[in-house]
Every structure is written in structure tokens, then in C-alpha cells.
Length: 235
Image: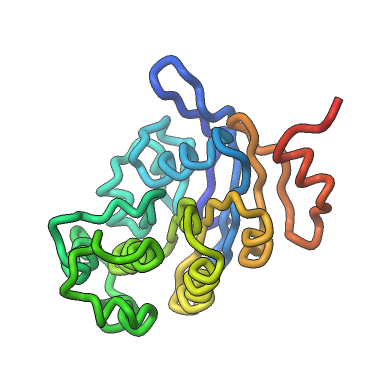
């Protein structure tokens, strides 16, 4: 049985339908990547899993529970944490205070605390008294990841964590992924960068216009198949 799964998941913003019967699975210890162009439905999928977008109850399952209609605070307490697109740090709080926000409502003890987050991202310890938004974009992303880890999640959702960052910074951030997995988390990573997704993921799902158009392991998927699933096959 999958650790996390969606079951014919649909999602709406008012009258606009953003997802059409999406089925994905995440196994314990696995990293899956969700790729697709802007507007493909990737962020809506993450919001649906994280509980910031409420759906029908059976549409998302986590461990032995149905969670499709549970609010975000309950889902976080159960063991699913999200690194949102755009980082969304609290500008009035220091780096350390932003990290400590991640412990709010925590019900699971585990590997992650201030010390281990600082070991993962040493620059944050040096900057811990600085306002979170005074850091570089890459350092702010490290704070956002660290904040999510502070809840000791079983599943970490990472929404566009490389967006707008220089390649060298992206490489440094993605170096943390193996250590996060070693500490016991399974990951879902949303990425527009296909190459980066292929490097980090055990399996890949491609989305287009709110639907899954392709799935498989990086070794199974050809460039042509990915291109067609990403942009649509040429007529």
C-alpha cells in the first residue's frame, strides 16, 4: 500500500476546474517529481495534498487515513509538510523564528530540530538573527525547507524550490535531498526543470492541463515522450 496516493482527484477554483481525475502514488522512502509547464496543475495538486485546497474525502489517502477534506493544520500534524512556491517567510521574524514556526502543532518527534537544520544548512546558523527576508533567494529557500523539516514530516512537498535561483544555488539546495531522505522523509518535488527532476526522482509524473500525461522511472522515459507529454504531441 502506498504511503500517499491521490484517487481520481479533481480540484476547482470556483467554476474553473484545475485537476481532472489525477492519480499518483508515493511509496515510503521514495522521491517522485511532478513536471509540467506553467498552468499544468502542479501547484494545485500540491495544495490539494497539503490541505490548503479542500477536496472530496476519498480523493487523497495518507498511510491508513483518508485526508482529502481535512484542513492544512490537521494534515501537517499527521506528518505532511509543504515548502510553498515563493518561500513565504514571515518578514517580521528572524531566520530562527521562521524556523521555529515549523514546530507549531507538531505531533511527531524525530531527527529535525534547530541543531540538525543548521547542520544541513550551516549558513542559516550564521544568519539566524537576521530577518528572514534579508537573506538571498537561495538562503530564503533554505529557511523555507528548514521550517518544513522542523515538523519532522513523513512526506515533504517541495513546490518549485529552484524557481528563480542561479544554477549553483540550485545545486547546493538539491544536495540536501539525500540527507532529508536518510532522515526518514519521502518527497514530492514539483519542478519545471526536467533535467533536475530526472536527477533527483525515483519516478516522474508529467502533467498537462490538469491531467497526468506520462509517468515512469527516469530510465524508462525518452526525451520525445517527455516532450510530447509536457507540451502535447505535434499534430
